[in-house]
Image (cartoon, rainbow, N blue to C red):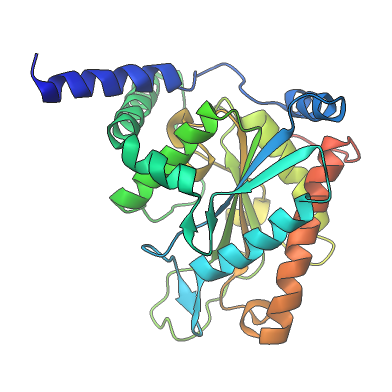
Length: 299
């Protein structure tokens, strides 16, 4: 057995161990609320991973001199500060001002082959289920494909979150839309929440959390006017962040707080207050859900 072949077999073995199981609920409203009750009784804290979208190598969209990666981080830091109020919650930022959390950054490097194998394994399973008809294809909103290194990091975050037993993963973003003249604002406006499509193992818990967050955000903001997003929370099969190819066990919500060209983002004074409001309302939505203070209408 060559060294390269042996390394690949080890990687696929670890991928198999980390694999998320299709057709078995990995997270529901009940399991999330039970985990929080257990934390209140002195057991392990309820673990939330907050992922500011993009990074210094791939900064996302931009408008008016503002980088999405910077906006995402600013909002994520405020959200993490909000969760400090709850001693039953451990909220961790995947990325800070210096870059990725050191443990996560090392994980990307140390486990690169394992992450690649995990992605390949989950994709193969998904394609097999689609081909057999066990899972139906359901594409509501088309997305740009993530560059290979970005995709690697996102699958790495999912794999790491599985291994670290996170209960909830929140991805923070600001939106944009393709247009001919990118120096001018686009036409959609508003926030959108994305959750795993209902055939995925982490779908039920994700939808419950997203509905609770949306109820809070609606107090100050409107749902996106982009078709597909207007039915937020929007179910999605393609976004890696929320578990594409059934790659994430934890509940996950990707939050697009606003379109980057909207005045509430572009105006300096409005932006400062908007980011605080968005973080506070998101925190209140999660807290209301965990404490069963939200009436949910699961789609």
